[in-house]
Image (cartoon, rainbow, N blue to C red; front, side):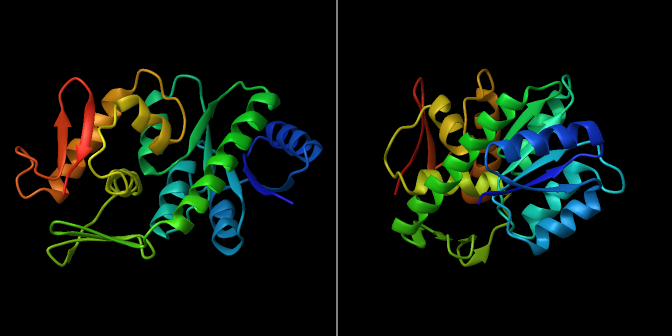
Length: 230
């Protein structure tokens, strides 16, 4: 049975989610505080986490950050207030897989959860058939260890930067447009946020290129998108 951790300190919302998820065949564990959620997610392998941002003791963003720093890649869907665009974008940059804004319908939650679970399973299957170590010029990507080195020195990448680099490295020479990157790397249609791709590409270049202003690895194809070359 697919196991879901629901983290929300509002009893009515937590109860509503638990009931509807269980009606759809999910096994649900509830947590009321951020520290409780972090402890549970660190010790137990959940298939996905529904994580409210406004939590007592430890807020949801800190929970997410700590999990990703611990290399815990459990899919996370953030539950946010309607107008918190900054929190949503920041959460996605930290490694969240999707977000839902309050108020929401249980049907929307279940639909988004199933989509995230499908993508997670597809990623696992793809990773199983791909090389663990990729070498491109002076870069080495060891996907089994989630480590990238440049000239033998380990780089510090955010989870999203790592996913973006791996995505291009596995598709050398292909020109990929921003919307495709958003859909595949971010995991869903994030309409109107193509600037996020440009920002992450720029940050990634600062770390992997010898001269970020004249990139030799991750190049711009004007009018089309980006490509990684050997």
